[in-house]
Amino acid sequence: ICDILASKNGFEYRIEYEEGNYSEKGYDNKFRNILNVTDFLIFIVYNTEAKETLLRYFNSFKNDNPSLIRGRHWLFTTLSEFKADPNMLEAKKQQYMLGG
Picture (cartoon, rainbow, N blue to C red):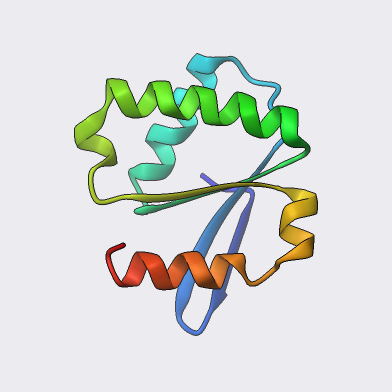
């Protein structure tokens, strides 16, 4: 269900690395499958164009599936953004753990 399964301080991160090359329906299936096993959706993407595409697909998915999204958290970032701030996962986890 994920490309990378990592853990830190007892918290598991399921990370998808994407290049934005699937159809919207393909990403809908990915979003649904990931949300079946975790409340924390993380996508690290190749570039800004891929990030914008996935965010567009995800916003549509959110609008079509509000009950599936309620109480969930997500992070969409580019590889270069992540390299510049590798602690963003920890910051997002803290937000998640606090319910924000």
